[in-house]
Length: 83
View: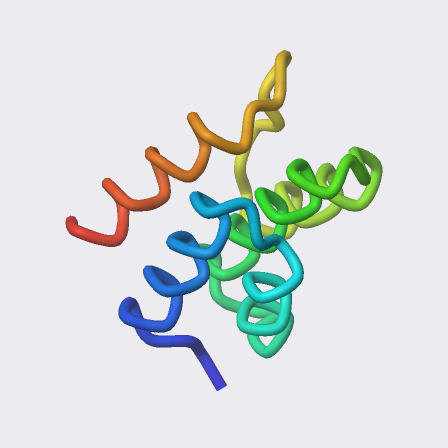
């Protein structure tokens, strides 16, 4: 079942606070929607698991950043959630 924008925003707020474990608990529930896959990738950037992050970016149909930065990516995700 796809996550709602509110659920993804909550996961993003956990990432902002440095709690990737809590964010992961949310995003791993949706392995299909593009925004959830992107959020999942961001969580793995934060965790330091770059190969797994690349996998989720691929699932999200997003180009993996040359210099992965969870802060920048989270900011962009939040913009996308407001669109």
